[in-house]
Image 1 (cartoon, rainbow, N blue to C red):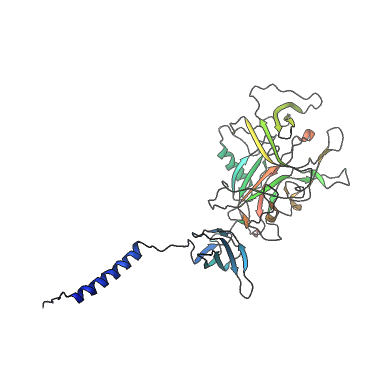
Image 2: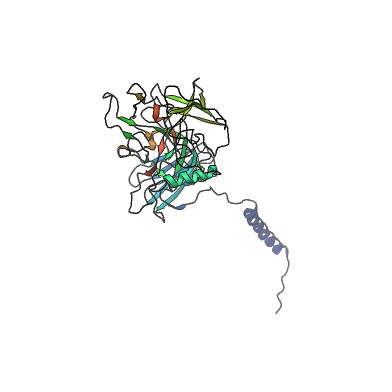
Length: 415
């Protein structure tokens, strides 16, 4: 059978309409693509792991809200981008709204927070940086071996303080620091201590000054935190925030204190101290500050190894931060008995570990002293906060032996 199509003016008109319609559909598919907001409707994420939400559209202002049954929505953020983070499992219904006179938009999404596949450890998981200032325990805690690189020393530091190892690491004199993190984000839980840091502080058997705080060996380190805003797992572009401890707002505390240490020449001739026989070189490592003060890290007979970090090739080391008022007093009057008195709160290696109540991320302040509301901390940094010398005890240097997230329970055999 043969079908014959008769071409008439009427059929021409019909075919023209059909062709135009098909052309418009084709144009819609190729010329006008659908534009995505850049946010999914549903996310499934482990607890204590951040999820970045980055809308593609812009507007005059923004609002992220948490929808709660039978309660008023709570505002989470008024920034365009938002990073969601939750401590507890469950479904969280979020509402994102763009307020704009031309293109307003409302987008709703569900965040399903589930348990992690492998239980989180409450202890330090990774060390990112180890940059000590010169000191009598540097190159010993941890031990430097000829040929070690900076990365080698970071690995040794990590082996010392991660998990339940609890081996001391020295940060050296003022400014020396290390940065570490856990295998998850430490959540900022309002009104609670979030993490703890262990050191080797101890109280003296007797307190010579009954009117002073408890003292003994207190070598406080300032603590800073950073949130992994770019979500790349590295403390590279993040801003660091100081946790404002008991001394932060006192007039005697110096902000933006800067110190430079100068590496001694290999053939430097020692200058023994004429009064204190234990000081074998009183001009060992020179330092100067932006406060106009100068001095030296002395070398003593108890530690004969080089005090300048041997894996660092630079001839100068520069550190900047907050300096606390010296806490050491020569109670004997002849240099034989120094007591380092502890501060109120907010410093590592400040009080014996059993009296360590922990650190609260809510204490975070920016470089101008303004309060910062962080969802949590991915990176934690500790640096020596004092520039003082204590007779035969040597320079004050913060020591760290470990740390843990106080929101993660300690389970048997946790590591």
